[in-house]
Length: 262
Ligand code: THG
Image 1 (cartoon, rainbow, N blue to C red):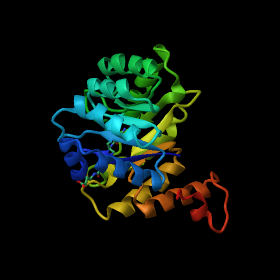
Image 2: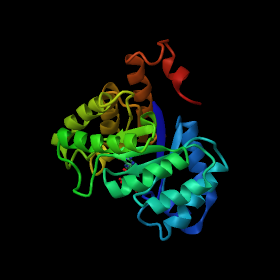
Image 3: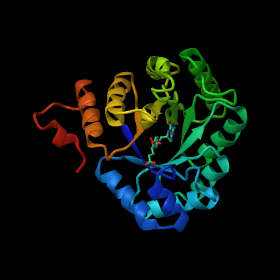
Image 4: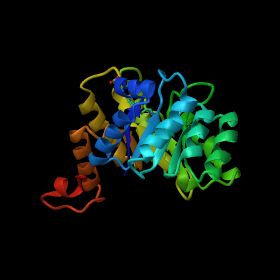
């Protein structure tokens, strides 16, 4: 499982403040805490409060690279912001993300090729967020077609069914789990799968319990990578245990200690 830490996001007040003052200590501390907790990669998102994401994104990339060589998920809906981050990245990158819209794919697939970046394709289009599994699969097929046509490696594509909050779209969550399973069967080789886990509990409680219960189900549905809060220790222990039960880690009595990153 590729664990992407979600905490470098302008949605959080400490990061919003760090971006405003270009205070790199706050960002670097948050990066190292996430890595110590088990993050394999970092999501970098300037968020809605950023006045100038074209400056803030490359700044984030630079200051994060000073303390780690882990992969970076450049998280923006604006391809120009993503490109600004790619230009200064030395670490492996993953573009987060393209929607299933031709205008976006026409820009972001060539960018991903040029910078040898991974690419997250979310099953949303200009028409909005899909309401069922069939609509999600249709958008995934559209992304997959474009990726193949443009010669981008499918193994570097991460499909994201877009997790909706449980208090908004309770009747869609089962569909989202089934979609993850079907993404793996949509082509050979399979694309990778990813979700933004914390979306499910936005506005709901108890958040951590909802997150870790859903994560268990998503892991059983074939999830390859997840954007989450690695500092949630119970969540990380649940993930290790889910992978143990699915025979991805070898059992020993001290398996939590064995697989938890120190
Ligand atoms: N898919 C992809 N990328 C994504 C998402 C996704 N990136 C963003 C997001 N979703 C994943 N990251 C977060 C980060 C934080 C929260 C949820 C998802 C979150 N934040 C608190 C909240 O909104 O309540 C903020 C609390 C605070 O202000 O301190 O829940 O789905 N590809």
